[in-house]
Image (cartoon, rainbow, N blue to C red; front, top):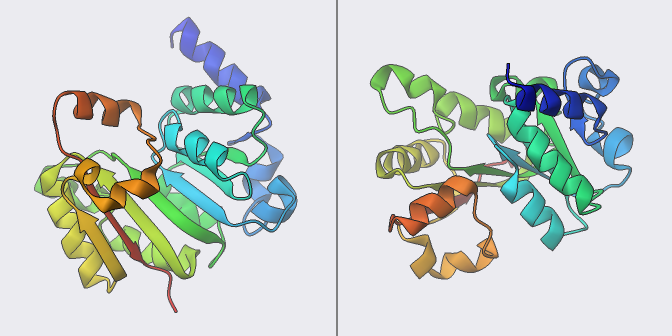
Length: 220
C-alpha cells in the first residue's frame, strides 16, 4: 500500500462522515440513517459506485434539505469526497464503504428516496453480466429499498450498457421512463445542474455523448 493510500485509509477511520467496517454504526445503521446519523427526517439519496463522490457532494450543496450517501468499496476514493464534504461544512453528506451487493444490510425497505448510478463499470463481457449495476438482481434490490415511487437515475458513456439497462428497466416495469442518448443536448440536462464526475468530464472533453435515464422503481 502506498503512503498516500495509507493516509487516506487513516483519514476514513477518523472521519465522522464515513461509515465503514470497524465503526459502531456499521453494524447498527440499518433502518436508522435519519435518527442515528443525520438527525432529521429529510429524504435520502444514494450515489452508487460513487468514486470520489462528485455527485454526492455536488447534489448535497444544491439541496441542503436532502441527505446524500455515497457508496463505494474503494476507501481511497471515498476519502477524497469525505474530505471535500467536510471542508465545505456539509452535514447532509455521508459515505458508506461497502460492496453494493450488501446494500440490504445497511438500508431498510423503503428507506431510500432516490438512487443515482453514475458511470459504473460496464462489465462488458457476457460472463460479467450479473455484475452490472442494472442487472435484474440489482434492480430488484433497488425496488425493495426505494420508497414507493422512488426514482432511479443512470448516467453512462457506454452505449452497450445503456441499451442493456433500458431493456432491464423496462422488463422490471420501471414507470415514467425518460431517457436520452445525448444528455447535454436534451431537456433532461436541466436536472443535472452541471455536475460532472471525473470520468464524465474526460468523456465529455473527448466528444463522447452521455446517455441518461430515469424511472420510478419503488414498489407501489
